Length: 267
Image (cartoon, rainbow, N blue to C red; front, side, top):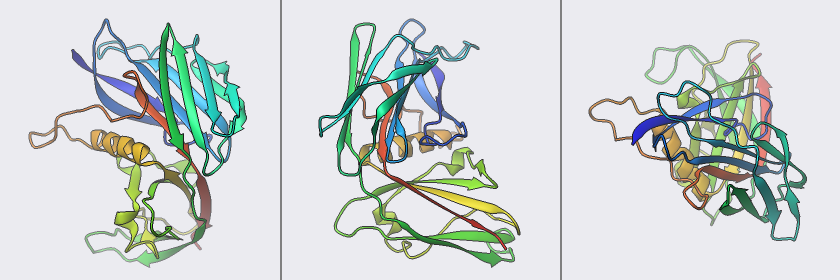
């Protein structure tokens, strides 16, 4: 077995128009590639799925896209759609869009094998507001600049999980440290003002995409973030696959989310 690299395109963008590349360490076998499934259902656009095969570490070619799959997305209200192949490895629905509280089912059939997943689309309270505060710098946490603060309500008496995606001047912030997921246990004391540690300057535009995610997606993104930020030193944890939520040994994640967006301009 060799260690390889799988590229996840658009995984954290959730149907936004800017492409992003994330890296996940996995064990690969030259004669036994694994399927990579990136599947997204949100309340803002129709469901989409991206399919590819893992590649060997020494293979300089891009991962092979899968164009011969049967991809079906359905929900517990009886809605079902066989997704259309729109581009290499990219399938999209023309009927299924996310609705909070519904359960969504994914089935992918490729070369006689079947891969399945299901997930409840969690609700999401509105973003109350965005503000910002100026720091002159000189402390351990802040460079000089304006730092955004997010205000939103976290429902009580439930376990809730979130992904936060940020844009600065309409450009996605997509370094490994920019992949941010959290649960409500970590947010309870900060929910009335969650500061984002990105310094902005006058006239900068900041945009936030707040996503509700399931516990399974939270675990996947947490593991992925750990891999992305592993420095490979002697004290670092050994690489391990991010724990996905798709059956039959597939890599990747079936992401089912509500999302809300807000923005501000530093004046």
